[in-house]
Length: 288
Ligand code: ADP
Ligand code: MG
Image 1 (cartoon, rainbow, N blue to C red):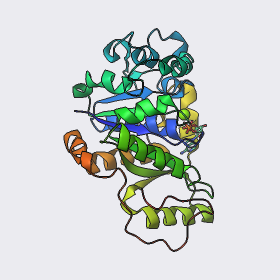
Image 2 (cartoon, rainbow, N blue to C red):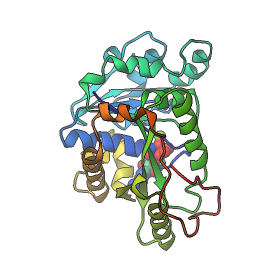
Image 3 (spheres, helix red, strand yellow):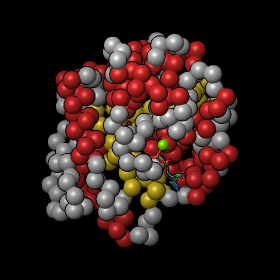
């Protein structure tokens, strides 16, 4: 069964989409069967995987409204090596249309049950909000990967995300956990970034992935060619980092059955390492 992960952070522009498409391509590169779901009406992950969102006849919108199955709505990208359940502007309407429907938070979860056996990983690119769309992602997932920039205000908002995840865990999806924080757009020449990065590691310990994604212009250029950086320019530093991240994830992940079996454990275990000083002067969640 597939391990289902949301890439989430309610801040915009932190690298969610870049992480989703490059992790999908990295996982495909190391032999994993991957479905990438674009849950953002902006459709950037769709376009960034070489699928023209304006030409799509069926999207995740149809899946949420149950007028198409995942099998009907997905497309395959030969170049990228993974399947795509795309999105476009139409998805913004789903938010409103779903409010009146039953099981409105669980529609994606229900739809994915039919294809879970066909994949090793299902990655969901979430919009920059804690909306009903994001909630559908969180209800369908085993875990959340949180891309973060090592900046002064990086943890601002993490508290809201952690609280939402705790609520979803308590009320809607006992399987949900935070898989880890991924440091992205990292520039080692900037002392503050190094400091924040070290403090993140000291505070959140094992919940911070070892792999660090550097700031790399090739990753930013790749979407305009309709490709993830990993496919567009494999030797680029950023691309290599995402393949290393895919390998780290495969290495660390228990099978999906074991993930689900952890249902009773809290989504975010307390972090044992004490913290000298908070990395930022904003509210920091004391555990993940
Ligand atoms: P989000 O999905 O969270 O809004 P994006 O993945 O779209 O964020 O990234 C925001 C911008 O930063 C995009 O222009 C993207 O190309 C750029 N970007 C993301 N990660 C990197 C990186 N590691 N190096 C350079 N640019 C990056
Ligand atoms: Mg995005």
